[in-house]
Image (cartoon, rainbow, N blue to C red; front, side, top):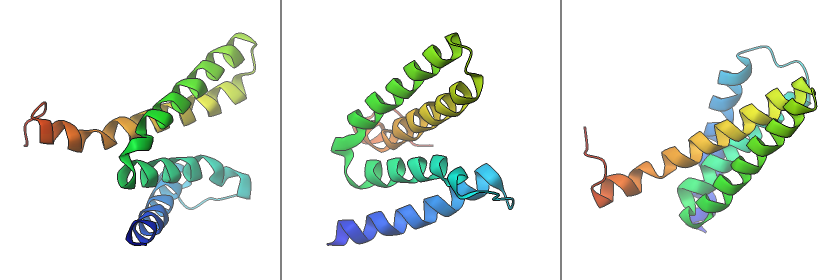
Length: 110
């Protein structure tokens, strides 16, 4: 029960932050919330359930592969959107590994 509450709190806070970073104060359409929604879900689940990190890395790599193919097919709008989504998910997932790297001694504390 505590993990579910923790996921909801992290999700709401990160959704607010990612939405503000992505669109500042000009939210024109509801479909523009899809990318911050994916980022918030990724961050929430990676912080609470670390066993899902590999799945999110795999999904991010799939998005980056789709970006390559859509770019080669000259569908640039979709390539840009999917590429930024995949890269953002990859960065969020890799940052969530930093706690484990510090615990194991691979990265020294600042």
